[in-house]
Length: 546
Image 1 (spheres, rainbow, N blue to C red):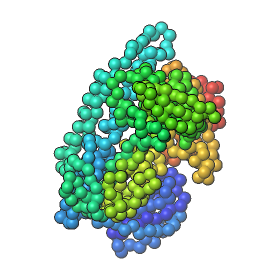
Image 2: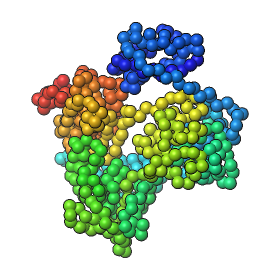
Image 3: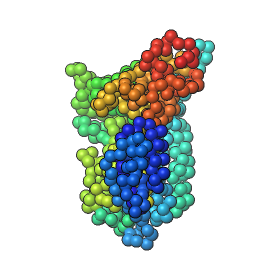
Image 4: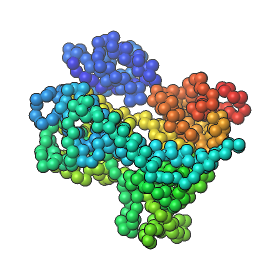
């Protein structure tokens, strides 16, 4: 069998994908994958069948075949060939285990090398511990400030030590059930120690040299530390060490107001700290649509969090237990004092100790590993996945990349990564969730854009919750009215965004959203109301009216 990638013009939806698939099936093609967004079909043909027959079948289905590329298929790795292992994975987080499990399907002999704690960032020091504490903080906030007349709730000072222990117990349970226990279940070999390459197909760990047919680098990233005079002499916190604090600090200053800074800053505000968020940019989340930035700025300000934007950091000093941040804002010098200082200015890939140059693996300006669309590095034996590539910094993206890498490295699939539609959630209160293109990105891609902006106080669920600060925004192609992007600031925005992700991924239109029944008094109803807002005033509609 030969494998081909064929450009196909004229496809506009998943129905078109099905038409092309059927046309190819009817002429004898196998292993068919059709993607209307990429305008391509990938398929296999028997060696004695010319690809022109596939082009003819597509033409007869009323689509336009274009350039054809023969995909060179990589043979599945055979046990017993060169190397101590079929697949060595460096790192043990979401990308690593996803990749190891996929490689096991092919009977590969897999080793995982880990220098620290098994499980990586998400379960140990990222998603799991932060989100369980965020929930605790939110409950504390509501207890102190519930919006309902006649409800008499209160909250005392937070006893943080048992809360941290409960968090640690949850982390341990999930680390064991979702990572450690799987090592024996799948027959992986775990090697504890730090790996470094000694050549293009060998690593050294604990004084041993180990070779493999294929490698995956999935070493993740660590908190980045900005170059601010005096910072190195100050006892500052990172997103890792903050989650181990025992007393709640009276004053917490956060340098950096991205999703990590906002989540953790708001967490400690809810637990009782006086919190100041500081950043260089003049507005929060500058890469997001302005309506999103405005909504979350309003929410944080209403909750009593101090925002310092457009700050130029001059120096930081420690005076006893007090940290002093010297800044200039709008031409005026200020000193922000705090009992604890959190630095949350992004992440740095963990690549410095890997000795990648001897392996022929290129890195970018920030130390990130450069990969192609197959997750392969500049060394054809070595793949990379997850945060170490500085792609979208989500564990579900890392796991997806790890699975693709194993399929290509071990299974010979030559499957491309597809990160065109990646939802993202910031777990603030209200939450921020986005998918697809912003209005500006859509314009830069050449779309004629039409948008709908729905304030949260037009969503019945928000009204009954008595929390109406937020927004829904839809970005559509003005010609086809297909949804190009969705951006939400609301309670449960993370739950809403999955429906929006399906709309963007499968090319649904504004009319599709309008015509789809939506349960009343759910936050997801905001998607339908935002769709109606393109040409109606929803304030003039009755409940549930479309």
